[in-house]
Length: 186
Image 1 (cartoon, one colour):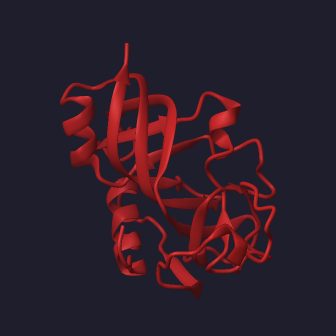
Image 2 (cartoon, helix red, strand yellow; image 1 turned 90 degrees about the horizontal axis):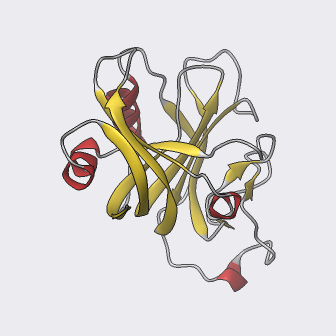
């Protein structure tokens, strides 16, 4: 995903989550750039993301941190319990997809769950939630319909995503990514 704006992120989140969704406020941003592992402040990069210590430009699980923010509409500043972070870079993941209707909004949604702990190492996880963040939804539902088919259901797949966004707050938010391609498992 090229130069993504926070406005488009907020629109994507609103479309996915429905009316009343909160929006991110940038506190640290950096345009996407090519960066090698040697340029990272911590050369032993892991998949643990700490919003209070990591900065835009660092690599977490091989993905570059683009922005770190709090989620607006909450009565607290950015913290471990109120964080939105966007990342650039593609990653291939294997797990389970489900394509269904969101009970709250009545709109279609397609999500992906990492069922293997080894797969979880490929995505950033919040430092205080290392046993979480195994599920995210796709921002581009039309692409998901094209790949997974128009019928609701679930199955196993290997996917390629870009533009991963980690959302965590005490409200109805979900991490999300742009689906690029997938191969179905039988």
